[in-house]
Length: 394
Image (cartoon, rainbow, N blue to C red; front, top):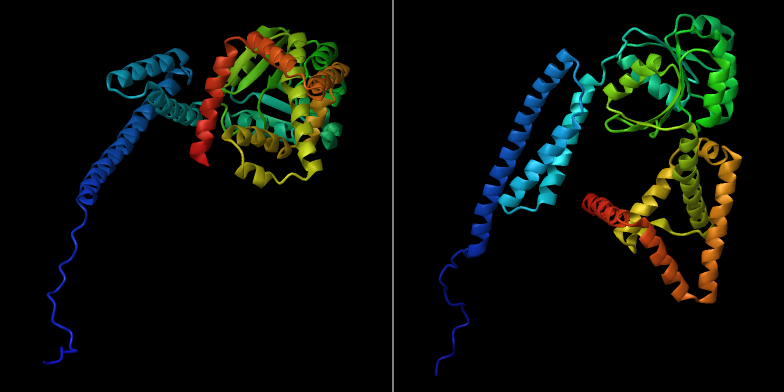
């Protein structure tokens, strides 16, 4: 019996494996998606070209940039179209909100440079501070003649204030009244005197007392890091001769700001909640995390998106000017009283936990929820929108 040969037997050449059928099918569909995506970009480019033509017409006829009614009508029409096409209307609205905002900001880059009174002379007291520099830049871009008066410039106050049309006080809250008294007598009688501090009662009183001409209190609800004025709110507190102040307010509108008028008393009361209390609570939370040595990055690894959003607001506070926030929180005795009431409320709620009184906690929770009313649902929708944006971004 012969031994089997140890030589390998010749085999047929292996034929290349065919790619799975689904791979070719997917590739074909992805090519179609890429084609559609390129078409979308081309359509967006065409839209921008038309928007640029609209900007020229608005510039020629001095028309406003923002047309709220048209934007809302457009969104409503696109939502209806989305529903008819079997798409999620919220998805389509989200897309078009982004497109519209981009269009507004693009128009503001051109239209927002218009000066309502180009060549007018503006004196910014405290113009070397952050907000002073911010407004000096915007005013110069709109063809205003901007002068700066800071601490070292007081020997030249008379020449700097000569023939000016607008004087803006951009100094710390605790100095505004003193500065208003000092600069008021130097101003021409037709000059508009305005302040941009976050407290309105005492500064407005000081301006009215120290100057007999047009006076208006302003509070921009944004900081110097703002890159566009689009829909940024400016609070307006009437002072004196408001018809003479109108051109100043019109300039903010041209820049894209939304003006909200109120009294000094209402402003300061609401700002106690909106700014002083909120900033104090945020500072306290951040300071507590620091004192505990909390590993922030690890909490983010193990947290929900809503915690990341909340922590982002805390981190945002500590990325800014400490002295500015100190001014806001320490501004008035009324704000100190408000903070004491807040601490008292915290202690009362802590008592529920100490006693293990879950039933009372639930009762208080439901009582507050009822007080918030429909805003709770609105807040849920808005925060969900922000959380989803955050998830997509990170």
